[in-house]
Length: 250
Image (cartoon, rainbow, N blue to C red; front, side):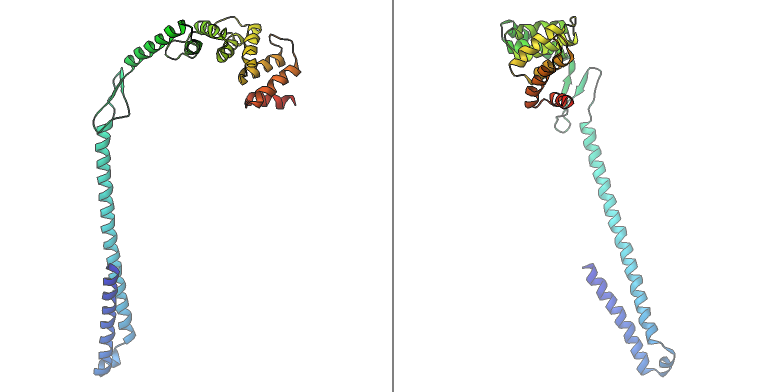
């Protein structure tokens, strides 16, 4: 619409300028002698250009004002939302991230710790009844420090109880404890024993560790053929460490 109005005004001004030139040409000899029709035509074009520039500047100012106003409104809205959702933390509490408007959910770390300890105690009670999966979980919590303070001695105790029931992961972790000497005196012979138990049940990580024991001669005589054998079995199951060792040997 703006373009149509501008075009109409431009044509009108040009026509008026040209018409005035023609009138001077035919009806007034003095004007004919002193007036330049081309000059009037170009004057009309200059006027049109000036009008176009003024319209463009005004249009730009209006658009810039609208854009600035929109940005100001968005900033004010975001500021209000931020004030509604900003967590108010204390030394013992922190706020969760799920909330509605100005509603806050307080996360109490002390309370959560009590819940974690309660869950762990329930696991221990279940483990005492002989469930080997739960026995492994209790051992792993002691091993990793989840729910409870890290204690390798307790981890070893529970891993061994589960390992003796043929729990494959417990066997591998028990071998790891003896291999690294975590909470116990380092014992490669015991490490080999439990790595072998888990390896023979198909645990790829235990197979790799058993191959490593044979390659390095820890707890067993050095045997590159046996090391390669266990590396190959482990590598076939996707163990990247075994695959790298095989490349070094080949």
